[in-house]
Image (cartoon, rainbow, N blue to C red; front, side, top):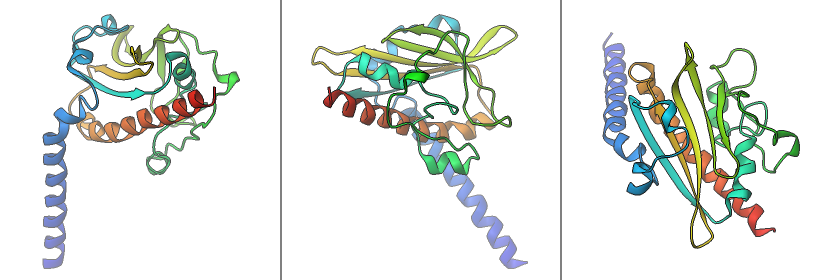
Length: 209
């Protein structure tokens, strides 16, 4: 009985530590890599969820032109190029993806209204729906309830004077509390890896041209 109670105490302590750490790190996670100007900027798609309950911005600098980055974003999806994140974490979540390491012409025809799957197979979270496409500038996708957008995933490309491009991933969502508090830090881990992978892939492509 003492061993069991000790196990419970240790487990509860670990859970509390994870929760406290997540709370303390949330402000940093919610603006990872993003500048004040980018956070304050108006981007395509903002008007679809005007007053989000949660507003996140994550960004990275890529030494490539927008047209060398945009094709990688077009083929995102579990049934296409994957989500460019951690293979082991996707597998652990029973959501294995094959993350593409090249541009596939057959996956470049994304259109508004298309589904972008988060996981392969039928037993998966609802897919994102493409809301807007701005060639070489932005891809906006999200989920709707009763015809209203309730969350958005905004991939925005901002060319810089030095020839590089800023890739900003903005999330505007009404989904908070409960399970979403648990998902929040996991999403950060996977999204920062996704941004780093897109950077790596696009820079290799740019260097070869």
